[in-house]
Length: 118
Figure 1 (tube, rainbow, N blue to C red):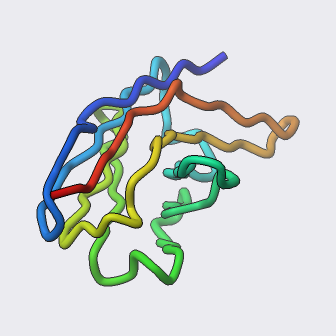
Figure 2 (cartoon, helix red, strand yellow):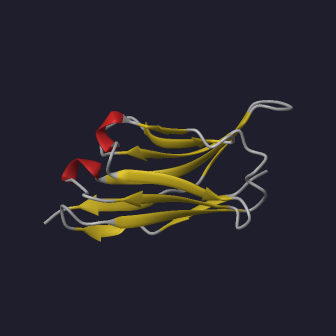
């Protein structure tokens, strides 16, 4: 069982920056991928960014060039640097861990609120 705890959310003005952190309770280097998802009010949860075990990065189109996902395996931490924030980035951001072997398992944090508003 892996526990994930997000932090770093808050209220920020459009154009501002935030850095989200995800602390894992166990080694994340064994995970096939770590990711950040978000859920806006009355919308489905969507993938924001994913970092694969080999280092490959994936971003949803709306955040490309503005957000950067990274991981520190030694500290069991995953980060999401968010720049040039827009009101449409508002939502609850969730950390996700995914592993396929020996069986598919997926873990979620409780989420951290990000509000982009003037």
